[in-house]
Length: 74
Image 1 (tube, rainbow, N blue to C red):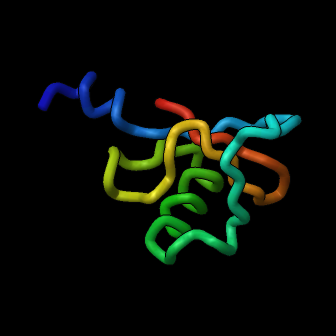
Image 2: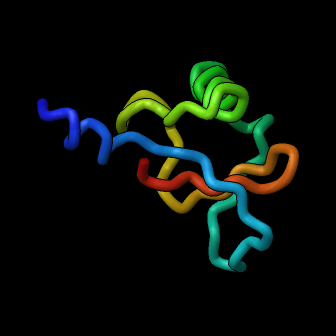
């Protein structure tokens, strides 16, 4: 698999100021243990989330943490 293909499948977290009424929103407490570990690592270390399938986070989803962060393609 090409590194560019892997990168396009990764996710990043992007802070947002407002939440559209149609957005899927979950509180950090609703994440499963493995996804929560990846989420905290991404927040604390500025890392991308792993490729599809490693977490149950979807592009465009909003996670409530110390504010709102949106899951984006890396």
